[in-house]
Every structure is written in C-alpha cells, then in structure tokens.
Length: 390
Image (cartoon, rainbow, N blue to C red; front, side, top):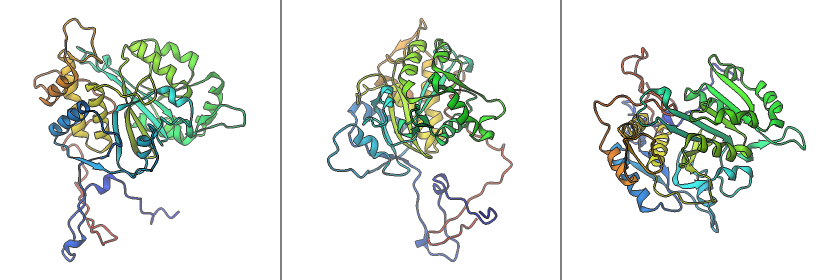
C-alpha cells in the first residue's frame, strides 16, 4: 500500500463537527450533524422509575437524547430480540441497564441471552465511603470474549478467544490506564494462551509498566479473595466468568448489578447490567448502576465532560455518607436514601468545597486548557465536496 497517498478512513468523532462551505459554495452543501446522545430505541420500554431517573439526569447534564429507531424482525419473542437489534444500527447504542444478563449465559455460544458482539466488559467501581485517596478505591474491569468469538486451535481442544479479540480487550484496558492485567483461563489452556499471546502485537503486550499475567483459575482464586483484588483488569474465559463474578461479589461485598458493556469492533452496541440470576430478569431501579452505565455511555459517545460531572456528583454524595440499598457502606455514620432520592441529589450538583473524589479509570481526565502546543484546527467539509477545506 502506498502510505504516502493513503487517506485514513473517517471516524465517528471526525464527523461530529461539520462546517461552513467555502465562499464559492452554496448553502446546499452544508450538512448538520447533531451532538446529542444517540441511543437505539429499546424494543421493550423500561419501567417508569428507570425512565424518570434517566430523564432527570439527562436534563441536569443538558444532554439531548436522540432515539434511533431499529429495524425489527417479525416473529421475535425472546430476550434476544432487543439485544441482537443493537447490531442493526451502526453508531447507536442499545441502552438497557434495567435488563440483566447473567454471566452463566457466556458458557454457551448460542445463548439467546447474548447480543451480537465481540467482547464484553463489566465495571466494578466503588471508592468507599470516607476514602478520598485513590488507593482506597475498588476499580476493576472484568472482560470476556463473546463465546461465539472463541475457537479451538486443534480439534478436540477447548476453544480460546481469537487473538484479535484478546488484543482488542488488552488495548481497551490500556486505553483506560490499567496496568495490572490478568488473563484467567482453565489450567489446560494456559500454555495455548501463552503461545497465542506471543504472536500478539509486541508493542501492546510488552509495553513498559505493564504487568500481564496468564493465570490458571485455581491460582487466580487467591488474588480474588480480598476486598481489593490484585489486578485492575481481568480477561476471563467465557466459561469461567460466572465463577469469577461470584467470587468477586463475595470478596468485595458488592453483589449489586454491574454496568455491562458489549463491544463489536469499535462500536459500543449494548449497555446492560450483569447479575447472577435467571435469564432475562429485570433489574429493579438502581441509581448506582444507572449513573455508572450512563457515565460510561457518555464517555463512549465523546461526552467526557458530562460523564465526569455525573461521576463526581455521585461519588461526592457517597463520600458525604449518602448511600443506597444496593451500594451500602460499613461506615457507622451513613444515610440510606431510596434510588429516586439519590438521583435527585445527584442532579442537585456536585458539592463545592468537598475533598476531591478518586478518579475512575474508565473515565479519562479532561485535558488542561492551554497545555497543548498544537494549534486549534477546524476542518470545513462540504456535502458535495470530496476534499476538506481547513
């Protein structure tokens, strides 16, 4: 390929800002691209408690919601209907944190509970009431390949995630600044996983400051039996995910649903909740998982400032001793409020004068104004023009 003449493909973020035409072009060449939050319209509407809380948060954040209608196939009647629909419309995320997906479902590739995706990441974050120091935070991402994206090296062997999927998960963890990554597999697959990793991108797997371990599940259990696991990212074989999920819930004391993000290529296709239980179960209104799921979705949509504002307001409430039933605290002086009240308090805004809350690795810091030496560049793109004008 001639790299000198190669033009990179445009990305979704490059299309968020469209521009004025040049002086010689007509106004018909303009194209308006909205900066609202594009979410795929859910096939099954959420209950009023979820809908009201989400509407309050979006109004407070001043984020416009842009529902995108999905094409629906006739005759679909199971939970997989709405989940698989997430792959129909590129760039639109199916947002359904009220829908639970059990980690047990990842034990079979053909499970109707799973969406069309490549891999999944669930986030376990809690800074702990009264702990402003980042060292006291519980900040972990639990990743797995979709079981349909796993294949055996040889006939008769257990399937492993495809190398490209493993690389995508490692890249995602590194992009969040996570440096202690464990790949947890059955003991019989450890050597095969190591061989596979040797063929991966060296700049990715041998990056300075990265601790990347391939651990058999029996050896990994000891590292999970503490309130603060030794890793900040775990890439777990799909068939082991339910074991790891249950162990983490027991060790950390957080048995609440976790925001669960399904990825296909570079797209975020579905945001649900991960919870041990029956397939297709509905999650009662949970303010903590709603706030975290919405913050993650905003971040993936490029709305980092809104995501950080939402996270900081919620974290400051917990730091001041205000908790909900699903995310309680062992601290002696706490006030438990219901989920609707918690959302109202979040929307009251971050408290000034409070000590800073710890960073959530899933949300990047905003760049400090004036620190970049690169000039601001605005690219003008006309609808009927093949070349941008700067």
